[in-house]
Amino acid sequence: GQQVMQIPQYQHVQEGEDFTTYCNSSTTLSNIQWYKQRPGGHPVFLIQLVKSGEVKKQKRLTFQFGEAKKNSSLHITATQTTDVGTYFCAGPPSGTYKYIFGTGTRLKVLA
Amino acid sequence: DGGITQSPKYLFRKEGQNVTLSCEQNLNHDAMYWYRQDPGQGLRLIYYSQIVNDFQKGDIAEGYSVSREKKESFPLTVTSAQKNPTAFYLCATGDRYNYGYTFGSGTRLTVV
Image 1: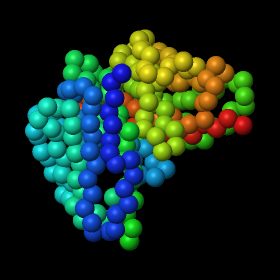
Image 2: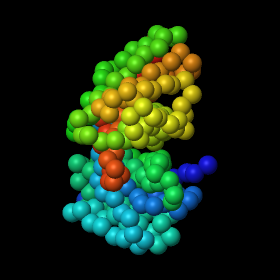
Image 3: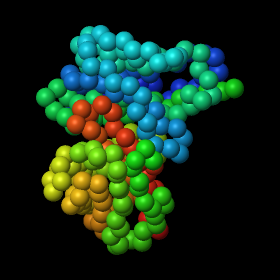
Image 4: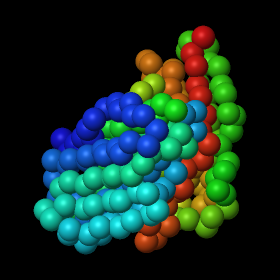
């Protein structure tokens, strides 16, 4: 079936280090969304990318959608303790409207 | 949270019982979704509804049932047929542009 995998599954970084999570889909996606879930909380929508090769920035966060629209990445520059949580990507296979969520990357930031 | 209310926050169920989880929204969104999240895992789609009086099975619908009699409400019933119901259940809504789901704060269901 259609799958969206994220790597790494876990990542521990020292505060101030950079962090990147990668999202890979088995099928072409119409768009890609990113969510953040704090420990004990619920996912919160961060951003959506639609165009092939699109890059968007939100302060220290940089999001990229691959040229083939099958992969995406989220890069955090100079992590802070407030970045702790699990980051999910999600996207609908082309021709559908049902979003498939990635497996998530859990980030821990050590002060 | 964010216009979506899930209740209760914590729920304990005895073996063999049916329980219903509530999800109410005031965002005027057409689409509503139920996801299940197991510890350290991603989100798996149980059921979704694009319009009132219509709903579709997701990837793990067995042992669950839903109704969508009102635009604002999308309750989920966890039946006794669901063999491993202990999980975190999340309700979400989406607008017609599908520009990001809004999630409720979730219900943690435990079988005792």
